[in-house]
Length: 259
Image 1 (spheres, helix red, strand yellow):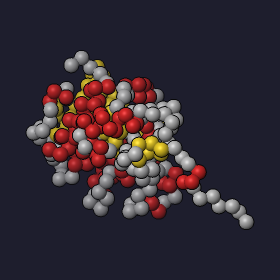
Image 2 (image 1 turned 30 degrees about the horizontal axis):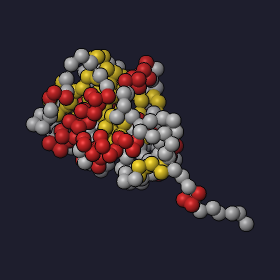
Image 3 (image 1 turned 180 degrees about the horizontal axis):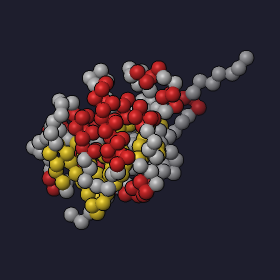
Image 4 (image 1 turned 135 degrees about the vertical axis):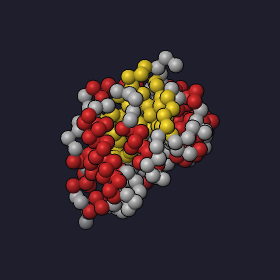
């Protein structure tokens, strides 16, 4: 493979279920990008090695995969990296996003659930405006500030609160708020949560990355024939997994007149 090796994509895929998802994700990434790919795993049983330039084996720190995810992010072989959850589908070239890492340390997207009411941060108004970051699509550069200090702090905070908090996004939200990293929030087209009925996109800008375990679970043929054609539009505003984009209509709103 002739892809550049100074930037690339990494996955963390333990177990057959996630490995098969990673295969689908890497297939689409390679289809639209000339990009080096690495998968971290504890077993390559279902990994299609022709889709990955590197297969790295990781020690199992626990039975919970998110510790392995943070290990993978920390040990990236690239100077500039995009970490992708296994249920992501890249449907356009995303190499231009790495330009942002010349200015910023980290490029992320908001989570569709802005505040997790089950987590402790939900009661702190400071985290209402600094809402949750989705941990499934992360562009970052290798540096002492990021891959050492920041990732170590994220891991340690998550380990402190696990197993009471199962997901790593609360720790990501807290540590990013407290850090001095230069980061930027990417628009939702770079982490389009297709299974959420309230997911919206901007006008005159395409979706680049779909993030949906339901979509990936339907397989590559469904994604190519049914999902991608419905996402290559510029006028739609409201997304439905079953119906595609629909424009806002006045009847969708109840108008209340002040008396």
